[in-house]
Length: 421
Image (cartoon, rainbow, N blue to C red):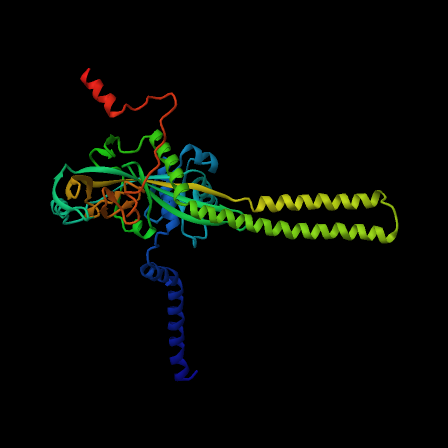
C-alpha cells in the first residue's frame, strides 16, 4: 500500500466514527433543538368554551404543566360520557392519547356532547365590570344628563353601589322555506324593566372580571344575594319575549307575507300541474272509448292522493314560524352612583333620576318614558322624550267611557254642595 493510501485509511476511520457518534446523539440533539424552538400552544376559543362550560355546570378543571387539563364532571355529564373524570387533550397533533386521556377538540365525543348540552340549556355566567381609571363621579354629575330645551340647576348624589344588569344571548330562527337565523344580544335594565339590543362590538369592549363583586348588589332598588332570583329571572324572560314581539313586529310581518306569497305561488304551480294531469287522463280514456274500469279509477285516485300530499307538504314547508332560543345569560354587576338631576323647564322645576356608570365613565343610559328604549339624551316637550318620540308627548289619547254600573263623576255644583254639608 502506498503512503497516500495509508494516509486516507485513518481519515476514513475517523469520519465513520464521527458519523456513528452523531447517529447515536442525533435524536436527542434534534429533540433538544425542536423543544427549544417550539412555541407554546395557543389556547383556542373551543378550548376556552370547554373549560368554562365544565366549570359552569359544577365540574372542576385544572391545567397541567404539559398543557392538558385534569377535569371532573358533574353527574349528568359524567353519565353521558360514562366517566367521572378525565385528562382533557386539545392538541390535535397528539398521535397517542395518554392514559385516562379524552380528546376534547371540535368534533370529538366530548366536544359534541358539550355542544349538544349547550344547545339544550342556557349557559349562565356571572361577572362584574371594573371601574375605569381616573373617573370623577362628581364632575360627571355636574356635567349632567343631556336634556335639550331644559336648563340644569342642580343635582344630588348617592353612595356608590353595584347594580345588576342581565344580558340575554339568543338565536332567532325564521322558519318557512329556506330558514334564516339572527344572533341577538339583549340587555335588561331593572328600571321598568326596560330592554334594548346591544351590538357585539360594544359587548366585546367591556372589561369583565369573573365572579360576583364584594359588597351588596342591587336589582333596581332591591338588594339581592349576588344573583337574580329564579322566579324573577323567568318573569324577566317572559317580558323580554313580549318586548321582542312588539319591537320586531314589522320584521315578523314581512316574513309572514313572504312565506304566504311563496306558499301561494307553489300551490298555484302544483294545482295547475295536477289539474292538467287529471284532464289528460280523462281525455286519454275518452279517446280510447272505453268505460271507466277499475284500473282507470285507481289511476285517478292515486293522482288525487299524490296531489293532496304535495299540497300538504307545501303548506307545511311555508308555514311561517319564528323561534327564539336562549343559549346564554350574563348577569353583570356594574359600579354606579345614583344621581338626581334638577332641571328648569317652562313647566317649572323637574327632577330626573339617573346613575353615573363608573365602568363606562359617563352617565348611564335612561329609558324613554314613552317608547322605553335606553337612550343617552332627552328633549323636553312637556316631559322627557327621546329623539324618536319627539312630537308624540302632546298627542291626543283615547279615554274609555265610565262603566254603566260604575261610579258617576260628580259635577262641580254637586261637589260644592257636598263640601258645604
